[in-house]
Image 1 (cartoon, rainbow, N blue to C red):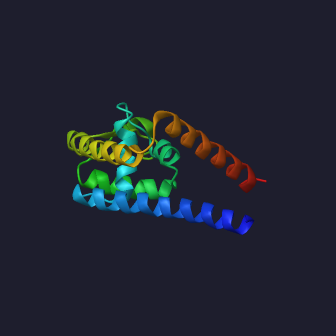
Image 2: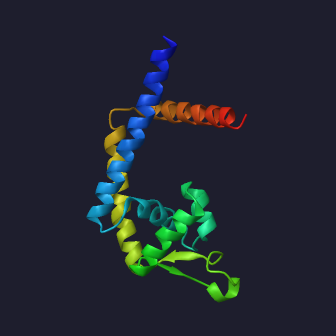
Length: 149
């Protein structure tokens, strides 16, 4: 019984994560982006004033090095710009903002995100959706507690 619960839990969570990654990769490629670009664009789109690399790393839960590589690629392709680099004395502490090109592609990405989230949840009612997110948050908090013991 316990072994089956473990296999079901880990298997489902792993498969869900893989499918999300696969969707990000496929949909990002349609926009000429990488899967890793999507989360940076998403969070920058939520913050008009911009975010620093450190803030983006925290928001997207990836390393600063990964965010730095992603931002370099996005800046090179004209999707983001680093603002106030001279004032902060550090490129890493300067806020990064979407360019017009970045806002356009972010709008397309946001529409894809909306469509995927809608499709995934269309079988769930509002109460089931709220319960699912509460359950997932409880599981996450318990797992964080266990991993930090």
